Length: 124
Image (cartoon, helix red, strand yellow):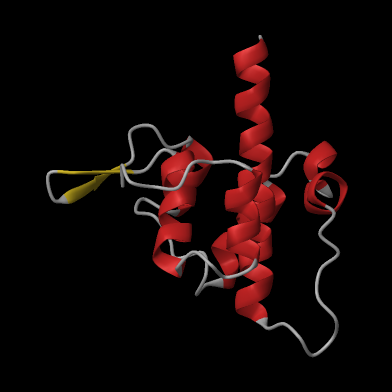
């Protein structure tokens, strides 16, 4: 997973536009949650206990609603509207999206919140 796209606004847009495949999008979330694939098995040593309790191995966020709901709830309140406020993403019109698109938007928003955390850590 060392070849993951750089976490930046362009990558977030690429997720929203479906320009990055589902596996890579999942891998990006797994990496930022702390999951590591080492010597043929998943290591969750770096994963927060609240995630590790429910998901000892990384879940598929694109295919499954439940872990995506947990991801949504883990976004800090001040970043809940980050896609709209930071990137100007207005969503899709009725009939133009499906559950997969919604989950990718949730992932994009969560990753954007992780980008904010990184920037704050770099400044502090």
